[in-house]
Image (tube, rainbow, N blue to C red; front, side, top):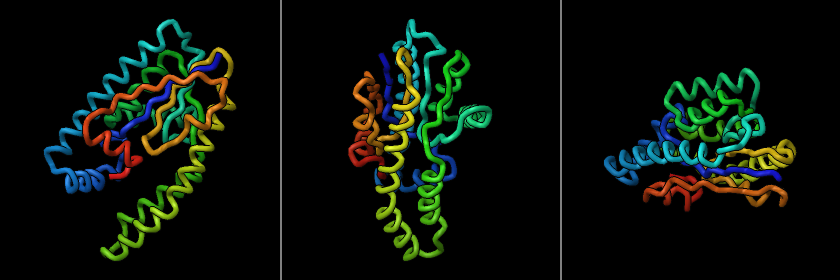
Length: 213
């Protein structure tokens, strides 16, 4: 039997890197500073609960049969582990959980196509780099036009990676943002357990809108 523990995630501020401040500004503008700060605190609490639930789900599962698939991570090996450790040290609770799992013997798998990630990153960065409001709007509209196609390609790649690399008797732990549609692309021989922990009002709003502020 193959099993995937699937966690639809909301990124905390540390996960977003240089884009985090910009998104927080947008979040405060839309929801208000107090509500947005409460949301960030609830996201951190949800990550703590996720860590506990994953350990509960992995009880009696051999560590060397566990494979990890992470949103936005296109590399494994020493580079992938360094990325995990660096992100964990900078406050990412998502990566802190992965770091602990790897320390126990779980294995990191390639989840993403780096070229598709670069395409999406450049579209987002063009918005923040645009010197005028009109150019920001133009860059945003371009992002809206092209990002869905990129996301669909990413989801197909992610699902193919899981389908191809997960063997009988193994458990995958998959962390992917609310905008992704991976589960319906997994093979029928994979048993899926979804852990849904982000239940504050803003998180649910972001999930329903597929991750858009």
